[in-house]
Image (cartoon, rainbow, N blue to C red; front, side, top):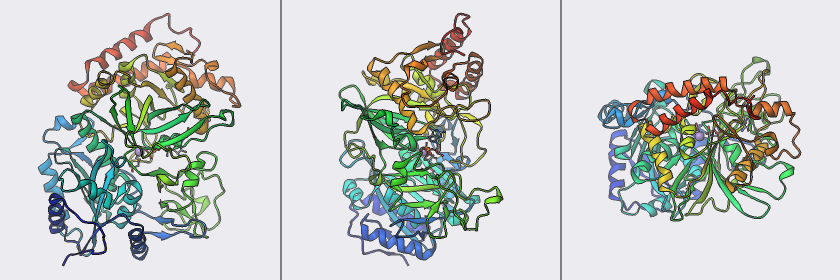
Length: 603
Ligand code: GTP
Ligand code: SPV
Ligand code: MN
């Protein structure tokens, strides 16, 4: 018999929501239904439940108050792109880069698994808002989940609870996310998106983007589809504010693929030579953008927390993240120290003796295995971030001066490259490549085309998505300038050429200088690149040869790059917009011009 929690001080006024909850509970047959109100008392209650059930382990509360550790099933540690489907009436709508299933087939495949799937368990009803309260960007979603870990994460990642029911009112306009862990059985794992129904069904996984349905499923896949229909943009982008010594703040939006540096750049700590400058985080993973009445592009962060990569996060690389993690944070798949604290590779402190690894087993430093999973994560509220922008909650969002695309590339891609114009910029984003990372299951370190960092997240046909991007220039009379960056180029010994992290400010300063019209650049066949003297390198000990290699545009590497772009465009097929094909041809002929090589930036 199902009972509904009576402790919640909130009320559902939407008949559509009540009906959907009834329908889902008839199907999954939970023992209890808990309507989440988002209160602090509720959070404590859910934490208690999670600790009792073993889903969360309390950390040392003196050292890390309000912090807990979660260990996921070892077979369920990252997004599973091969189990992720876009379920549109036709295959063409999903396009050649997405897995596609017909909606009826997907519903029919999953429904039998859901029958009684929550028996003996609790169904948490998690209403949430994406976007600042009162913003024209904001949208309501509701996730029904049998995972208390998911409910607790959603409370950090979104504006969750009564506020969302308030905003929804009697309306039937909300995203319906149904999530059932099914014992995290990889054989019954499917993440299906039904854009036409504003619905997501996710089963068989309790991890990250597979299970926190507000994040990649709604805020990117479904939202990108809504954005095309309604004339706005949902992007896999960080949002960063940079205040100059004159007190003017400019905002940039940057799209890097998963585990390629968005959280780090969004929280960067400036080098000492940049005293007088300040950096503020608006968002670290997702941006929703619209053209404003002033003709500029305006963006909000739809989320309210960070689900960030732990390994590599240290007081040296990202102090703002480290300070955020001192309280009220959930850690997933990191290592546990004997005194109840957390540890991961690249934390900047030696591994303490007696570590318990991410699987919950004693860790042997000589085993060659990682103590923390490479995709181990922290979930922390944005209000924990000392660098949080005062605009992070602004319903209007922030105006974007520059869009930055970036990948993880050992070769070819210079430290920074400016597009000649909007179409060239869209081409750069559309053809960007990046080495795969641990954020998704599968082989790590192989270069794949990941357009605008959206390959796994675009909810519709990629060719139409490119077209939507091209259209922005006509919608916005004052569009942002477009750049490409690469923090990950390597020398012949396989070491990173560029120090990265806070030093990336030097590149950002050049980008702002270009936008404002005072920074210089060199023309290359593939775009504009700073000469070494155009970057502010005050206080940076980087040898001139490494810098030269960072900035080099090598025609033979670009031949290979453009061939790879051609193959990718061939895969896109008939929906590829003609201006992108034309840009490809004109870049090829630029590269072939004999007069091109002897330029400063060309090695
Ligand atoms: P998702 O949350 O998966 O979308 O990842 P993300 O894009 O936010 O990446 P994140 O900032 O968490 O960084 C991922 C990894 O890249 C971490 O291990 C970082 O230490 C490393 N990283 C970030 N920025 C830099 C950089 O500038 N240089 C180098 N070499 N590594 C970096
Ligand atoms: C990513 O993979 O881009 C992430 C983590 O931000 S997840 O929430 O798992 O998608
Ligand atoms: Mn991400």
